[in-house]
Structure formats: C-alpha cells, structure tokens
Length: 551
Image (cartoon, rainbow, N blue to C red; front, side, top):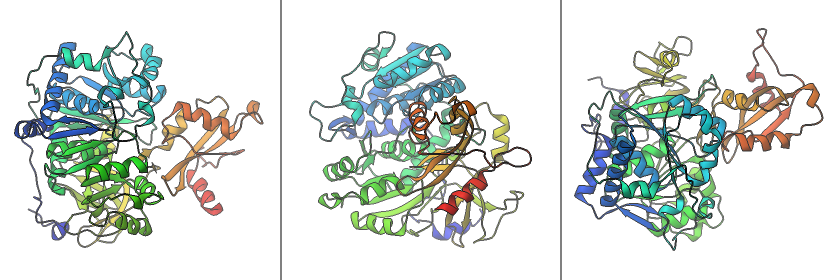
C-alpha cells in the first residue's frame, strides 16, 4: 500500500478504507431495529421515531412498486427539506428506483429540462410547487405525480417559527396522488430490491457544465453508502448526536452530510426548511444540537446577527462549512459563538458526491480544506497536459480518484470521457497540497460561480437570459459578494429596437421569475458591444479584468 503524504495527518480513530456491504437504506433499518423508539426526525416540533420512519420508507417503496415503478426507473423529488423528502428518498432506493433530486427553486424551463433529460415519470412535489409542474405537463412524460404539503407533518403548535411556504393551507389537486393517502394505502412489507451495490444506480445528481446544460452525475449504491457511512465514521457520529439539517437535501452536501450520515449513525435530525438566524439559534439552543454542517453564507449570517449572543450554542461539538472562502475574522467570531466546537472545512463537488477532502478532527489546519477522504486519492497536476503530478506547494488542477467518484454523466459519453480519465476525476478546480497532504483550494479553472454554496454556470444563465426578447448578446461572470461569496453579473447588449425601452430592473424582474434565485443575475450592465476574440468568442477574461479595475 502506498504511503500517501496525508497519512501523516490521518486521525488514528478513522480507518483509511471502508467497504460497505449493504445499501444505505439498510443502515437506517439497522438503527430502527436496534432503537425503534429513538427519535429520527424532528420538524418544527413534530417528532418521528426510527421505527415509524423505517415503516414509512417500506410503505413508500411498496407504493411505488404498486404504481408500476420498476428497478432503474427514475423518480423525482421536488421539495424543500421535510420528513416527506427523507421517506421518499429512502423509499425510492429500497424500491430499486433512481433518485433525481430537483431544486425546489427551479422554474418551469429548468424543471422541464431535468425531467426530460432524466426521463423520470414519477414525481413527488410540494403543493405550492405543483403550478410549476402543471406548466410543463404537456412537454414531459409524467405518469405519476404525488403531492404533499409542508403541513402534512407539522404539529398543531410548532416549536419554532415556520417558513413562509407553511403559511398557506394544504392544497389538493384531483389529477394527482395525495402523499399521506398514498402511504396509508400501501402495504407494510420489508423490501430492498438492491442486489449489486457497485453496478446499480442509486442517484442522478444534476450539476452544471461549460456547455450550459446540467448533467446527471451517476452515483451507485456503493458510492452512496461509502460516502455517507464513511462520513459518519470520519466525524465519529453516534446515536447521541443531534444534527441541525438546514442545508437543502436536494443538494449533494445536504443529502450526504445533513440527512444521510446522521441517519446512518442513528442520530437525531432537526430538519429546517429555510435559513434565518433566529430559527437556527433557537433550534440549536432548544434541541442542544451537537453537529452543524453548513456553508460560509450561513456562518456569516449568524455571526452578523445582532441577537446571537442571547442564545446558548455551547452544545455544538462540530461545525463544518464549505461552499465559499471564509475570512479569518469570520472564523474568529464563529469560534466565539461556538467555543466548544471543532471547526473545519471540506472540499467536494457533485461528481464525487461530497466529500473529496475533509479536515481531520484530530489535526485541524486553518486555511486548508482538509486531506483526502476515506479511500480517496488526490493529485495536483499541471494545467497544460493534466498528466504531470506537481510537487507540494505547486499550483495546478485538483484531480480525484476513489469509490466516491461518479460512474459518469447520464447519457453524456463525451462529457464523461473528458472529465473521467483512467478513473481520475478532473475537477476543473485549482489548488495546491502541502507536505502533509492538506489541500488548499485556490479557485476554478472553468467559469463556475459559487453563490451561497451553489454552483452557478454562466453559460446556463446566459442560455436562459437569451430567451428575453430584448437581449442580443449576454455574458455572465461572478463578482464578489460578502454574504453570498459571489453573485452573477450580466453584461448585456440590447437589440436596436429595444434601446431606451428596457431597464436593468426589467431584466432582473424577468430573471427572478424564470430561474432559481441563487443563479439569477443580481446586477445588469448594458454595453454597446462585448469584447471578442478573432474567432468571435466573447472574452469574459477582459470583462473580469475591467470589473476588477473599477472595484
């Protein structure tokens, strides 16, 4: 076995390799058998035990089977964080289906694309989001639509302030299947149709791409179990841990770190649908949360909140963050806020299903994003060929290899071949590694914008903006934002017939109704022309340089 340089920094309590022998859903079943009365999920005051959760998962799986969902069929989830997401997610896995987690901020153009690309025919959706689905019904092939409401699992007297989406009464649509009725009418029978962990697909997790079209990263049951159970082992989670689950479950970090790893280890998951500093502070203080996996944006929101010192957050033992760089002053304020907690960072991307690197609890190092995860190999390679491994301290592209790497992109053989080379995942991210194996993330090789922890691909935003009739040309770049890390800015050339008739506010308003909030431009600048190369390609590098000159 190679003696990797990061082994000198390895936490001796953590095994260097982990081989799962059963699907992820069966780790949850094990906890239900061992501790059926332990609370698995808490949702604004509603509690669900492991026994109740396990039964609901089995009933959902049997219900899907009775609807005609077969092994390998894709099933979509279009919801905020809630118990229904957890039940549906693990139910799909037990039924042998493939989870496709859709962003609940998606508008119809984005929704239609991912439904058609994944060819999913069954969808679980919130009632308040169903109108978006209705808009695309004649352009997609949905056979089954199961509708639920946040109110389905809310207590009569909530213990925490509710998100805005819970203010409205439950809606019922006659052409759909009601979630609770679906569960109640399904037989209770233990089921798990997964046979081959390494070959059977568990998840299509959509990412973006330089082509502007999101791609489905293929995750097997092996990869899912490896990353989720491995994360629980890395952080030393036990059944006594109480996890604050605020990161969205449709996002790979929230799915793996805030939903999967806590349930695989038998802990209690405090589910929140939306972020506000008040709700987070109240939840941590009330439930004595011990673990909070989050993003830099939320950390900034918490330390800047003027009432934070009124709450006791001393129960937290682990606070991990990622998604954007974080200032030293913010880290110092965070440590004052959670004085007993170990803090650290991680690095990963959709294609390796989080994480790629993680700070070891035993040996944290400020400024780095940790060392390679369990079973993971990592190199820094030269930008010219991508083949030469660089020495410690040299800057290049980060590439990963291991059981946490995707099998490829769904129906995208060329993109797969470009990104996966001899088993190595070429991340497109820049970094350097020190002598002890700690990775330092430096930026992105491609034009990715990181906004509040989400990946925003400019070409996708440009493709949607091009649907606005007044826009002739558009280029999108990321500009710094203290709260979000980065935010998209659009440089726009207006068609002659619209000049003087369109304002920045008009484009921003249109964007807010046609794309998810995190990816829509926050600034629009009108230009007569955009800088181009001799071949006619827009030179975003020049736009970036011009932007930096005026700051």
